[in-house]
Amino acid sequence: MVFPTETVYGLGADATNQEAIDSVYKVKGRPTGHPLIVHISDVLFLAEWARDVPEYAMKLSNIFWPGPMTLVLPRTELAKNFITGGQDNVALRIPSHPVALELLKEFEKLGGLGVAAPSANRFGKVSPTTALAVEIELGEYLSNSDLILDGGTSKVGVESTIIDCTSELPVILRPGGVTAEMIQEVLEVELDLGFVANKETKVPGMLLSHYSPNAKVFLSGTPLPGDGFIALSHIPTPEKVIRLASPINVKEYAQQLYSAFRLADSKRLKKIFVRPPTGKGLAIAVNDRLTKAAYDT
Ligand code: TXA
Ligand code: MG
Image (cartoon, rainbow, N blue to C red; front, side):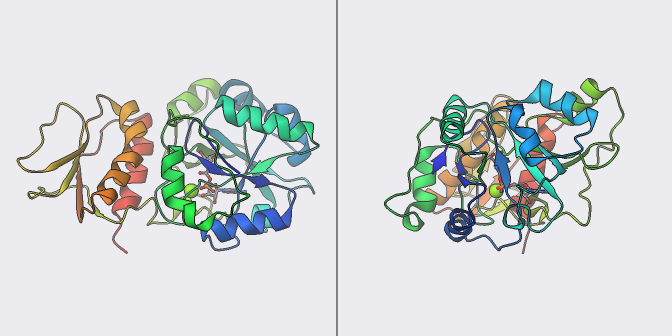
């Protein structure tokens, strides 16, 4: 079942059912061995999936869950290799979208323990932030018994912050809505902010190319007539260039980025010129996605 979350839409399946998970990989076209995030409705379910949870991870979970944060923790036996990609740790998240929480609770009432869900896009492509985008992206791969729950437009717009909690200090593997500054403030520690993925962990979000529209993305240079353009609202549109988004701040930038990419593809544009937001906070996550979208393979 596809369901809305506050970050992006997810393609969900019973995290304990290998057959269901296999079909998620098939629909997504994702290479096997890439681990999935298990979504739960309540921190009570944490102990089903994770062990040796460090104190700082409990603190983070108390403050930022439900919300756009995923914690990577040592796994219990419930987290099978088909979820973790064979790693000894598992990624967990409590989303805050009311429809997601309702779905998870209903599933748990039936005896379910967690819903594994990657973003509901084809592998390497742009994550969907609306139900319509899911239908366009995955419609032809879904079967008649698969459902898409429509929960409106995702409010954060970029995927969750992934934090590796398997060492003494947290490491940000993927920047997102819960920012490094927010984490540092809560934990009162200095983090290595150059979010460096542990070389042994497989994080497709850490591939150099990802989140890519069909159009080619440029982070510098001047657009020509007919090219697409994404920039903060105070930056004017060059003449005869197609404005794809005019966010007023970085929060809106994150919210609108993926739909702007999709708009470019629906208009069959060849090139998108982007003026990235500057600064820290959420701008780090936006720039991470932009750099990967622009990566020339
Ligand atoms: O906001 C989100 O996180 C969305 C919504 C649906 O929750 N989900 C999402 O899932 O972005 P996906 O599969 O598209 O990206 C999850 C990322 C992948 O890069 C994966 O490698 C990483 O999480 N991941 C999953 N399990 C992991 C683990 N045990 N260790 C390290 N990274 C892990
Ligand atoms: Mg994804």
